[in-house]
Length: 159
Image (cartoon, rainbow, N blue to C red; front, side):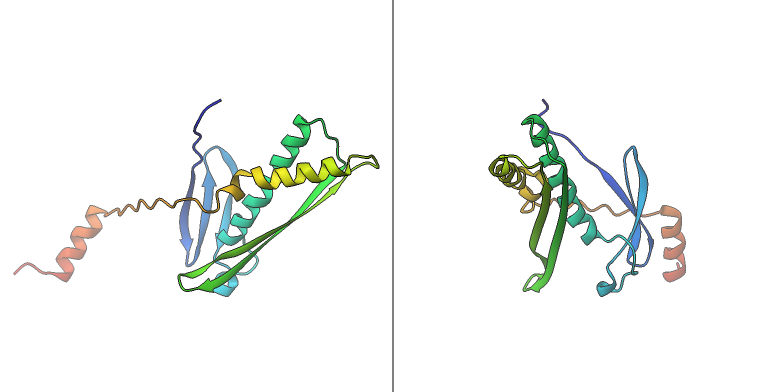
């Protein structure tokens, strides 16, 4: 097994407070906006929804994999994830994420095992374990030479 994997997405701004995000060899692209409470367009995916959805997807796939590996059969698993954003001295941030899994199992004596697997999935979900990750910021400024040259001549005429 590898010791490192790389996941890359690209986003392009297509409108004020919105754009499109794509993943390499992943379809479809997803159109997004800032949330309405931050002057975005209602009814669209937002970065905040992506954040919460990544937690939900990670938890479900982690539990499913653990259950399969443990030969634990279940009927269904539904999950509601709720993220709370609050403003503090540093600005807006997620202050709490609540996971509400609903696991359906056959009537057996496996209730305790089901609870243990759910708890283990919550503790080992890669996304939730990474929420305090270090942030790396690598901005890039692209200057289109032709536009720069014409702007320079218009704003600063050579005398």
